[in-house]
Image (cartoon, rainbow, N blue to C red; front, top):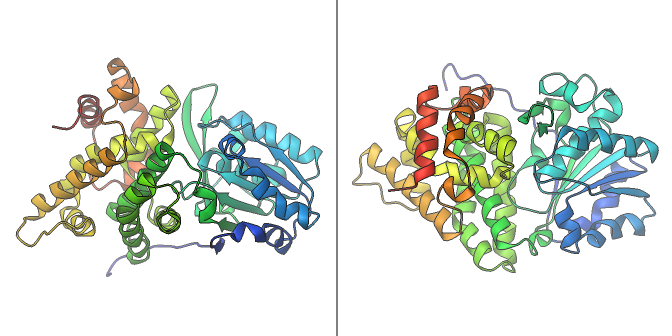
Length: 390
């Protein structure tokens, strides 16, 4: 602990439990909201879940406007268009429902309603001057952790680059986590979002910014996800596994919010910006390859991770234990149907140099990484991920 300095901000009120969505109107009114701008993932509509969200509002006579024109990898214009609609409807509370994309748009709309300007004005760190209107997040996948983070990530349509708004005002005021809302999530989404959450926890644990509080969140998240992702993938009606995954995702979100993420995220950004690969899937495919690269940067921590995955490390060296957890993550990916290579995602090999260049511009995750990468090393990781695990 000597010499360790860190700051933890945790303002989000968390309401967790099966059927907790029934209390949505009370959450809105408790924050002083009277008219809701409801940012909804199209997948929520397709799954027939929207009535579960709107029924509590209607029962309490809380007016709302639905905004469901959300892309899997949202562009800045979605936030700008959303704030116009929210102003027209005189909304004073924003509720984001779905995966990370819907929640990121909801966060940005809440900020724009009070700060003005365009979404692009707030890309970066610490550019948000005023708090937003009250914002409540309702995740319907167990993966992004966006309900408890201070980031909203977008694609800049003019540059095709991916970047985030970052700052404490983006922390949601409340989060409603109802595991029953995840029962209808398709297995491939369960897999990608679940490995996304695992990536958050793993990267936070080996981050150069890790500390005892982030470790507490990260290790518990890893334990829950490693034990339950396969169950939730195999049987989507397993409410116990779904509940454990939602809690794991939440804790992983808290871990990343307090310790940051690393090179997996930096390398995933150009996959989304250049090739529209969903963020969770990009993270999932890259995760074991980046872990293998990072082993020498935090050998003791990777050995601990091996134990979290049930590996008997008593007769292993630190290196052997680290290699064992990389293998365990690769097997988990395989178990839940994650594509093995970037080639499986139809990523052109000739794009590797540009992707590597862009990845190294994602400065905060690169700085958090336990091993400091060169351009050539990032290109080499992409190459390995292109060809597959040996």
